[in-house]
Image (cartoon, rainbow, N blue to C red; front, side, top):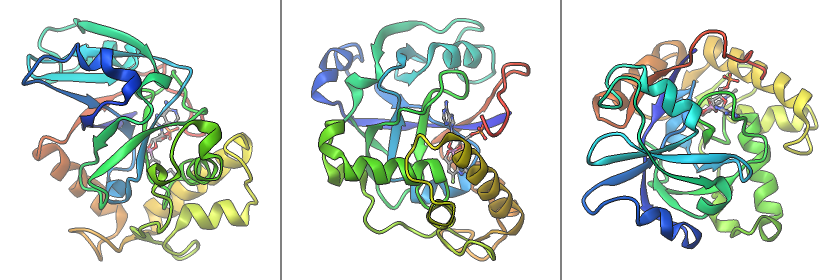
Length: 260
Ligand code: ZZB
């Protein structure tokens, strides 16, 4: 599975993450690293998710760059070219629960929202990607329903409603079957009520992937008017060339099926 690792630079750590902040030397930056299969949707990022129950690491990648991701992902990255400096080594400077970083503010490359919040998503899996997920409510049914739930029960989740940025969702891709807010349409049509409706969400995700990839047309960004099939790699290349992203491959055998 070939993901795009996105570099979301920390702008301001949450209060509960002050100790982590102290591990990043002056002059260096820390980045949350979501793994995505949909680089063409990055214009619509509204937040970035971590699991409040997963253990994450802060890894020293170079003298000036520190990554936040799962240990499993850091290990995989250390066996891929152009990320860490020494093959097979992924120096860890801190270990912490996702819960501690909720409320941290990060940059969202290409997004109409320049800065977004780290928010909790209970359905993030530790077994794929980096266990960090960037949120695109227009095109990901999981992100749509999770954002809906977070906004509705902000207090319960210990966040502020405004952090969710769920008010006007930016249309990025138009499709013949689901219009220009594919995730919203699928969640409503399929009567998905909660982020825990796992079977329905897996089905919705598959439908959104297929429709978006084979029939979608960009309606936002530098490649507006182009089919998604073409724009996907163009946006990916733009992000990589600008230093905002890098290729991240998941080794064979550990890859979960698309539907999770
Ligand atoms: C942004 C995005 C926008 C995504 C979209 C999807 C969609 P897959 O197919 O199962 O491999 N993801 C990545 N890692 C995890 C994880 N550890 N736990 C839960 N979700 C994860 O899934 C890859 C996609 O699932 C990734 O691409 C990421 O969300 C999420 F419009 O990034 B995506 C129809 C999907 N649309």
